[in-house]
Image (tube, rainbow, N blue to C red; front, side):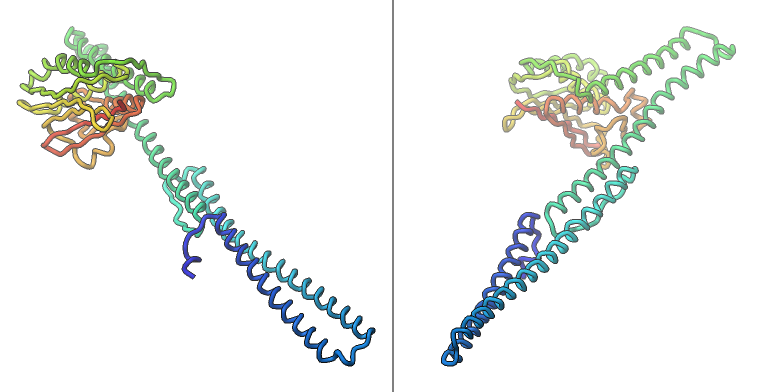
Length: 363
C-alpha cells in the first residue's frame, strides 16, 4: 500500500502495527468461532433423534473442549504475532540508533569531518540523524576556526615582536645608532602590539556572556551625525564626499558600543575608497526595524570572501590590510556588538564597485 511507504512518526507507527495485529486476531477468532459453531449445530440437528441425555451431555462437553482449544490456539497465535511485531519494531528502531551511537563515538574521538548517510522510515530517527550531522559540521567548522585563530594570533604577534627584536639587537650590537627615529620606530611597533592585545581583550569581552549592555534611550540620529562630522577630516585627505540620509530616530541602545560599530564601518569605508570617492550613510526604519547602512564605491570585496568577512583575523588581502593598519578583528567586534543588541549585520559587495554594510536593530 502507498500508506506503508510514507514516513510515520514512532507513535503513529506503533499504533498502526498494533491496530493491524488486533484486527487480524479479531477476524481470525470470528471466522474460527463461526465455523466451529456452525459445525456443531449441524452435528446436533443431524443426530437429534438419536441423542440421549448422556450423549447430549457428552457432546456439550466436547463442544466446550473444542472451544477451549480454539481459544488457546488463537492466544498462542496472538503471542507469536505480537513477538514477531516486537522483534520487527526493535530492529527498525535499534539499528539506526546503533548507527547513530557509533557516529557519536566517532565525533567524540575528534572525527568532525564525517557525516552520517543513513535514512530510516521513522521521522524521529531521521531528525536525530540530521541533528548529529549538523553537530558534526559545526564542530568541524569550530575546530578549523580554532586552529586558524591560533595560527593567526601567533602570526600577528610574531610580526611586531620580530621587528622590535631586530631593531634592539642591531642597536645592542652597535650596528645601528639608537637614534630618536629608530627608537620611535620601535615604539610604533610596541603601540601596534598593544593595540592588537587590546582588541583581543575587547573581542573576548564581547563574546563573553558576562558582557552587559549599558542600554539607554538615545537619539540615534545625532549619534550618527557626530560620527560623520568627526570623520570628515580623514575623508577630505582623499577628497572623499560623505553623504547621508538620516531619519529622526530614537532607540534604546548602548551608545558607546553602537558608536564603535559605526566608526569602524565608516573608517573602513574611507580606508578602502579611492581618491575622489563617495560614501553614503543611511538611517531609517523599515518594518519595525532600524536600518543603518554604510555604502561606498571603493575597491569592493571578492564574492568568495563575503561569508568569512566577520570571522576573526580574516583579511581579504593580508598585505594590503597590514599596510593600512588592519588586524582582521574590527568587523568581528562589530558583529559581536550587534549580536548583543539582538540585531544582525550583513554585507553586499562587488569588486571595483564598492561595499555596503547593513545593520538591522530591533526598534
